[in-house]
Length: 177
Image (tube, rainbow, N blue to C red; front, side):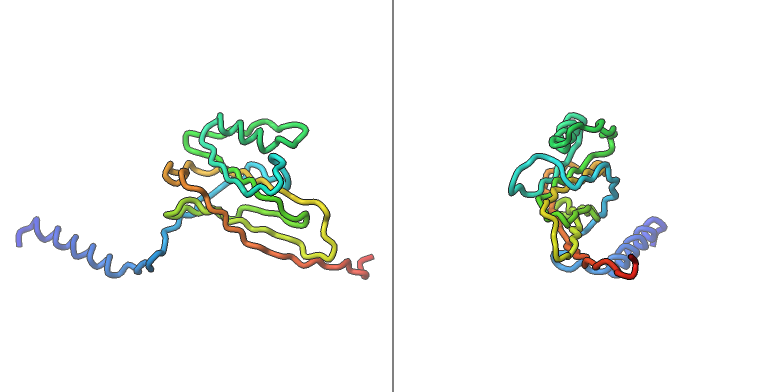
């Protein structure tokens, strides 16, 4: 064999061995990529008052959109805090306007994952399991900053995945009085 054929053959053999040793992907299995995020604000109640409103997720990619979402977030507030600065050249904002939930519950983003189907937003809803429930309702809003996602991902509707967690109420300990 010539000296130029041997390295090519060795490279092809190495690739074949790597492909053979790679774990197979099950049919329908998707590749996932976790997206780190930084919370900008999190409120127990905010946004417009819309009875029966479904959750809404906004991808914010420029300052003009950011001003609109910030204003919408604080529409029921007596005063709006200053708009946080975002470098939209390499960052973007994800705003999650949750639906109405019981007054003893809260929602919080746990993880963001990019899949072949788009962005999945994993949220934990934590509720107190008490005999007497507060009469109020919450409409949480959480706004996070993330690295700028590809346009193909932003075009797809994000999927909210809600995990429910119940925390039992503990009666006050009479010995502590």
